[in-house]
Length: 153
Image (tube, rainbow, N blue to C red):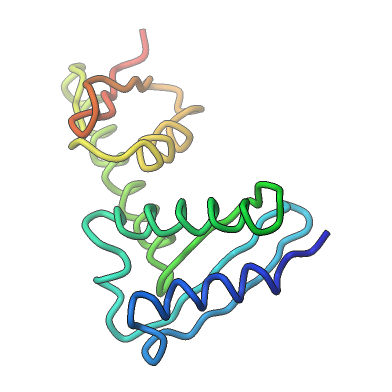
């Protein structure tokens, strides 16, 4: 069942509660093949919505998903994005991983990436999953958890 109207209305309510309704354009795109609602926000000032390394964006996505679950009675797959932030951040993480891989191959020693949220660590793990020369693992606890890239033995 398509819940685009509920997703749109709830997103607009959240944006309004943040006091940003005059500054944000909301577009909802449902991808039936992936069964996901892509909530695309456009604004001239994305920093407030994105937050530090996307923390506000992730929190808003979680709150939106929980609120929609209460409204429609089922969990909906959501992806909340502001000004293509997620694509730019993924490209940045890939570049960071490529740089670390080059360092690991040259030195033969493991290299630790900076601490990052679980979703970003997952992107790095998936990006390097089939790499023939390195393996990845996460180490640390909570906010200090990071990806360790090691030479493949």
